[in-house]
Length: 259
Image (cartoon, rainbow, N blue to C red):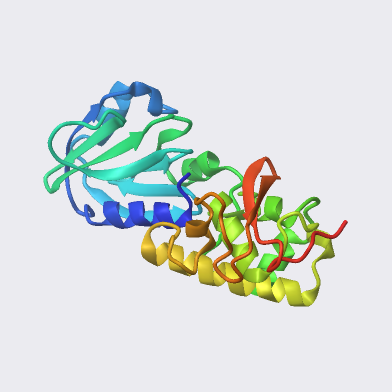
């Protein structure tokens, strides 16, 4: 699933087209155009000049001559530079005077929206929380500590903090030494401080890389082998469903969840 780092990569890709003119749009699959007909979508944007791109959490908004194209990538979506034959999952192709980029998505769980103004953008984004990149320690605690349930569920709640997904939350909690099932209201000041440090490290690194890194010191890279081993202590990692997501943690490095 695309998380903050992935969408930051897509933002950088679209930023390279700032100032380009949309020559045409090829809608291969109209089902991913969510709030307007495909023909109208093409008419509204053709011949327009692309502006800046902004990201909030997992949402990407691109200004196009007073209009706004809003992308959400769901479980399997992405933006890719285009050339040559279409990929089987290419759904919409944006052709500009500087080349083309494509909205690609296997499962089509979300898609592309067109907004007439910033107010409509806000309505499309809904109750999305503050972006995880740059959140302060105080704001992190203020937004999460009142949420009932596990800290894992709180971290992936996009209405509280936007941009952290399953892999990112596991990485943050592992680095903070906190079990994913720990109840949010039981965290002490030291745990909140560790959580903020880990979150800042992870989201900055993922934003730079354009994805969640899988290096030798990252839990994300260690979760795939069978059996998976902790990059820090080499213990066998545990795996179970937490907040309806497959979560991975270290039984030695991460504190036992409190009830």
